[in-house]
Each structure stands twice: as C-alpha cells, then as structure tokens.
Image (cartoon, rainbow, N blue to C red; front, side, top):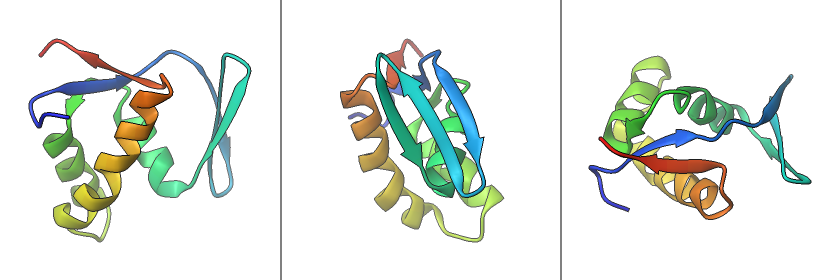
Length: 89
C-alpha cells in the first residue's frame, strides 16, 4: 500500500460494544477492539495512512510510530476482506 493512497470504510452495519465495535457485512461478522474501533470511525472520511496514524496519535497517548506498526497491517486486512476501499485523492 502506498502512503498516498486514501482509504475509507465501506457502508455497512456497525454496533458499538463496551470494548470495541461489531461490524457486519455480507453474512460475516467482525469484532474490533478499541483501537480497531478508532480506526473504523476515523475512516468514515477518506484518509491516507500517514494522516490516519497522525490523527490517532493526536487523540491517544501513543506515538505515530506505534500506530504505523499497528494500523497499516490492520487497514491492509480490512482492505483484503472488503471493509475498506481505496478512493481517489
């Protein structure tokens, strides 16, 4: 994935949980922890991965480097199962 690519979540049903989020689409259910929920909510608007990591770091007590290590593989997984899509910048 390129740093310039922008991603956004697809339109699907989601339900908050006390410790995260449940997302349902096409007969599949995904459960995200709090970090996954924060990523999901941030991807309501298209964002490039560096901007997404900066946004998360600004709202949580962790560094952008930490979020890059966690978020990039997570977004890649979401993309591979069709929960996020790339959009034109």
